[in-house]
Length: 347
Image (cartoon, rainbow, N blue to C red):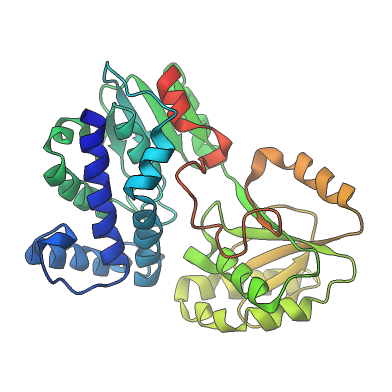
């Protein structure tokens, strides 16, 4: 019954997040908030860009809608049916990244619906929206109040930890938290595999996988594997509608800088005035640039995927994640391929 109540709370929160993501007008309390509360949340959304220049309103709304759409009763019940609910609540620390809006929400969800308590260290780049949503969640499920803790300093007492950061910050995690049961996440990125048979609509959707959140997420595509004879003009033509991204000053600064550096070093680039394409075997590419690599056989694809398996978050393409859906993970699409719920059940 306890988990059922918590599921109901998250279902209502999902409806609220979807309404916010769709910029719905408040009509009545069925939306999950009073008019004053709803307007307050809209105000917090509007301030995200002021607090973090990468958090455009469009990106915040996309995150809310993507997460909210997953929080349905059917989705949650199907996801949770294979996991037990803890009878002895443990304090789970979560060190959250701040590269995209609400990037730590899934860990927050997992810890609570496993029956444990959240002790979250918020990133300074994303420290207002999740606490505001948690306030609403507590209204739906008051029993969660004692199990949701946000830290703006030291984590305090914990029994296990989930930490997400860069390869460098992982060294810090190991030093200070390695003695706890832990999940430490490093840098990852995503790749798209093209066959040459993609429609223009699919290639346009690939643009969403590249440019959502300005390319800052680990699920953003930064590398293309393309057939030897693939005409890249097809790709450029399909993504032309994403050109307004270069009007964002932070993105534009990266684009101008990378273009200048690579041209000064006499490196060949393809350029459509808002994204740079560079032929390279390197998996990770700088912001505003996408690497591409040509292949002749499927064995070359398999070898590349095997070589970089520890650095890949998502693979997009026909027979993989559908184009345009890299940044819309399902509840069981765990970061780094590690089943967080199973880990929480077993440590």
